[in-house]
Amino acid sequence: MDQPLTIPAWARQTDQAFKATYPLGPRPSTIMLNRVLARSLVPLLNQFPTDQQLRDKPLLLELGLPLPPKLRFYIFTATQHESERQVDTYRVQLTAGLQVSTSRYAFSREDGIRPVLLGFEPRLGVFIIWDADVNDANGGFPFSQGVQSPPELVYRAAANGIAEGERTARRAATRELIIAARADKLVVGLLRRIDYSNRALTERANVG
Image (tube, rainbow, N blue to C red; front, side, top):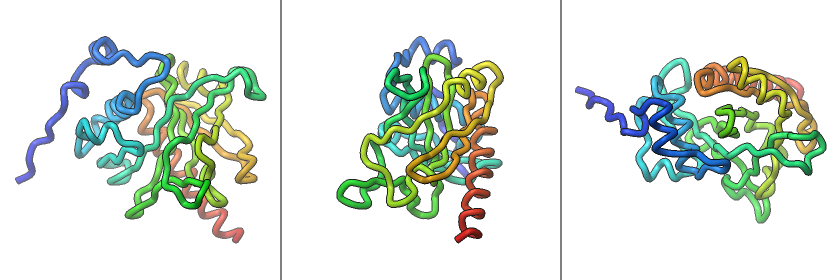
């Protein structure tokens, strides 16, 4: 007989109580980002991450339908940089991955588990979901590589729950579709990301 799922205190709290107990601040730690992510997926979690696992990047989560049984999440704080070409552009810096050469890194796909690249904007509570396949294409990415998102995409998601947009991924020489979603729409956003990524992989395979 299966053991009942033990739900940790941070996952049982209301949003108001959670924010009071665990204030995010402008640059949340990895453990805080992972807590926020896991809380957004509580109804689908088949196993809650331990305190030690919450310190990991990537965070491997065991999930129920309609999501795949396991996903590997690389989540970073999304911040705005005045130095970007477009004013107020959101950006994450890729500081985690498997080293594939002396200067390049890639997202882990060990055991056939899909990587998910996320940014989280703590002030608005919005997740930005990029295409991991695009962002480590052509030999991987250099440490601290920046990945951008148009600001209006994040604002539309904050207002409407979910939004989509595009950017030019110059290094991969392609257009990348980006999805932004509030916590209550994260599952929908992840399903769209998986669908779009699968289509893109199929198209690239057919072209090749």
